[in-house]
Length: 187
Image 1: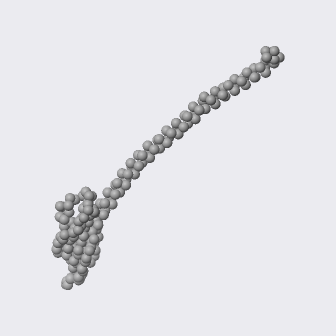
Image 2: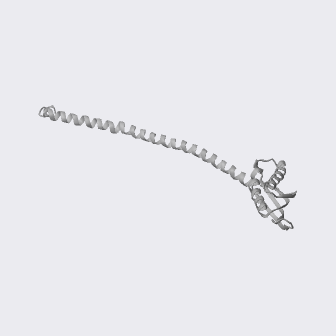
Image 3: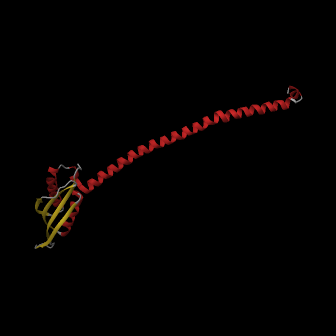
């Protein structure tokens, strides 16, 4: 074999050794460095996925607090001020609100009589028999303010009568049965 190598030019021999060296380096890269590079890429991808999970988790927490705030706002809208009051103070609060609504809308609150309501596991009901008198538009404003201030209030029964008056503007006398509700367990 050495005899064969002696007949080969030096340039061809160097070229052959260079090619062998390049093949050896390529084998080392393919066998050693390429798997390490693939592992590095996989770890980088895993890291980016974990960062997304963490950012999504904080987004979920923010979304949860936003939804809880919206629930609180809707509860306050439906129940008005009644949501935060203890049961013993509800009736007095409603009477006070009805009187202030009457004063604000120039409506005379003739009588206000609390009645027993239904209470069960889901909600508490307060009933009131109310007698009012005033101008038509004043009564309409009174009802609008009632809904705005006390939340979900139902007019169960109503009776309207024209009250004789020497005034140019006719006065209306109204008898209303009102029901106010509050969800149990909401404080």
